Image (cartoon, rainbow, N blue to C red; front, side, top):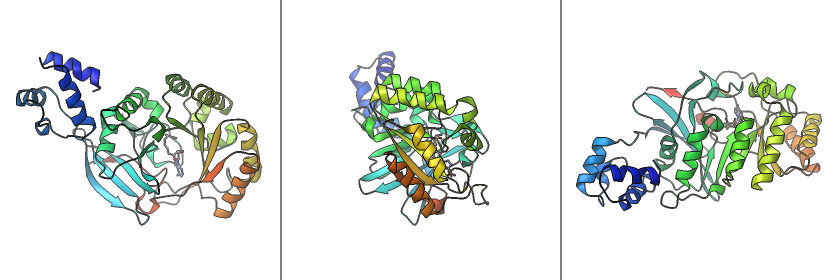
Length: 333
Ligand code: SAH
């Protein structure tokens, strides 16, 4: 609940409005798991809250640490037995947490483990917050790049951004939050109009519709031209640079001519390209093989020559199946 809703609740329970702020701080700054711990609230209020409401049970049930120090958390969401994953990555500037926005995903991208089994359910904004509050290290940035398509759970994601940036809560700057989408065009327009100052990352993976369709069914719904138009609207409206994510798969989308075609498509856009050699989506042999380092560098060089800022992303957490495209919904224990 946000502060307004908590104020409404205080009125219903006959308690003064300022209690709403105290309660909000307990929930969103301290990540309290029980009303009984809230020792600056009167016992009568704590008891009333415990009787009327519940804090979604969302707890870490398993932690795995990679050789590269990346940590993967398995969360149990309580009642319905759904389990989801988050990944904590250490950089020199602090910790970045990659959170899930849905249990499963219905976008069906062929190289991504999150799509196996389809969508189980949307996460609530509270469940997204809980992933942040339950991680022991202080988090300085959040990426919505875990399991799920954030813009397919639009309202809860917008609510989550409002909660996590609230000054009385975790107070994280919107500029430290990145929302990643496979390219849902109407929702990109809707997000742009909200002018939230969050970063937008768009999963492109190909310079043409033909190539994108080999990876991503969503490319049949929204042609690349329409997607790039929406992205231009996003940068024009927010003045924020877009990151295009591009997973390099050997002999599919990694030829120098494809880099040229991409450069032509992106010319003049306020953007940045993040290349990542494709990860195996599970332990089985994958249909897609990662582009070797030298060819990835050659691909990046073409883009750079065309004045498109480009980086090759380090892959983290591969040994614990925590790298891009490896997170998935887990059922029970
Ligand atoms: N649904 C959102 C959020 C997921 S983000 C989106 O599609 O953007 C995860 C990122 O990892 C996306 O760019 C996704 O396309 C990419 N990805 C998925 N599977 C991958 C794989 N096997 N190797 C590398 N990147 C992958």
